[in-house]
Length: 509
Image (cartoon, rainbow, N blue to C red):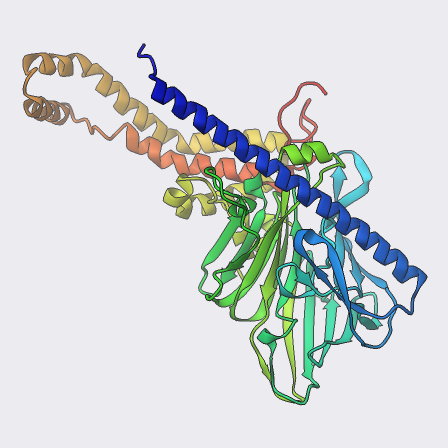
């Protein structure tokens, strides 16, 4: 074995030193973010206690400063009290707050947070302080002022406020009578009371906050947490939380991102949102217009374990979708309509949408292969998901459904596999003849190649006959893998000694 010289050893030592320094700096930065996150949570709790004890406290516009720490600046709207309201269906319970006028949390009533614990439910946006639907002027600045609840019923809640820009805004959240599962409608009625023309894009109400998405377990990969948006021409963009990560060679993390760019706008921005492995929050514009989104990452503590969360660098992702840059003349009133989807990444539900919501499944998100076979992987994964659910309805268990689906896929792929196997077997029989040709013409590679090709032709063998059939099978198996890895239907589903089909295999706890 060749020994490394002193220069090579020095190079290795320097690289290891740089890697260690990078890891140390990353941990220090994450520690600062966790401290800031705790400070934000404590500030929120203190603000809620003050609001509850002093219902006549003036409304404030709160901004999320660097690190997520709350800072307040007083305004002078009518004095209102902190108040909450609930909208409930068989599938979710929305807790709305007038602090920012939005959905503080959404409990998904058919999804338990912990295995075999029916007392806790998956709660969307519980890792963020700002409510879903709040206004934002830019990253880290979100409206947390106290709006007035103008009206509320068991199906709708309407908030009203006067902004510092002299805009009279009514914000209504409504459960539609014929709603698709997990769907909420939102109407924004904006009236210009300033006495001068205003462009909405230049006000504090420039974006609508879509909340945050974070890992539920330590075993969730960072590539499974992220953001997405879609342009009306069907261009779909998805980025994982690793998008904000500093490079392997150092540098610093991106503080936030304006997408598609600081000076660029998405053509007819149709919808945008955030997602974790199994759940998503999506905001759909009824009338898409050119726009932007801002997105950021934030530290997350899982199950109260700060040390492990810091070690694994656990982060969530948040996003806000831009409002259209409408021009409002004095006294003019305009209404913008939106839809929210706050629920599981269930292909069978998302494909009911005509707006392309099923794109958020992002089945083709596979390094390298996704670029090559993405056009085939996505539809195959959707078909396999549909098949998995229908097989489960027949056999009553997802474990048996996976086994049966695997057998069916293998049977359907058998002709291709058999053809590949036969081709490879015939080629193996030609090995002695190929060896003889190489021995006969040891110094003439061109003659060897020519004689070999003649040999293939004589025996009717395609040299690619063994590889191409295998290549055809690859998108199918990649689609099967992607479907199973993100199937919310398998969450907390038992099979044999396995308690949860989405968790890593283990024989004992």
